[in-house]
Image (cartoon, rainbow, N blue to C red):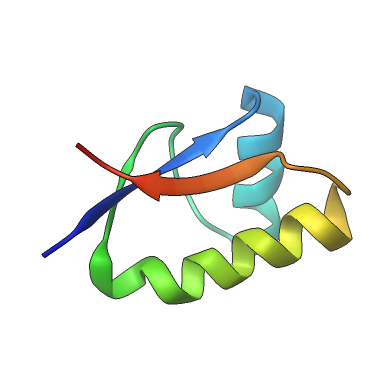
Amino acid sequence: MKVYKIMSASKYFMEKFNSYYDYAYQDGESVLDKDYGNLKAEIRHFNIHVVHGPAIKIEKGK
């Protein structure tokens, strides 16, 4: 199983992302492979339509 991490450009953007989607993610938190697809789409939507820039990203964990 692959593990990913959700990363934010700042605490403000993570709080805004969590509020927008009613989540409780912390910067650097691990995300399971099964959640990756939906979360990646939500991050893309958030970055493009809400904050208009690369505020949140998801990357492969180590």
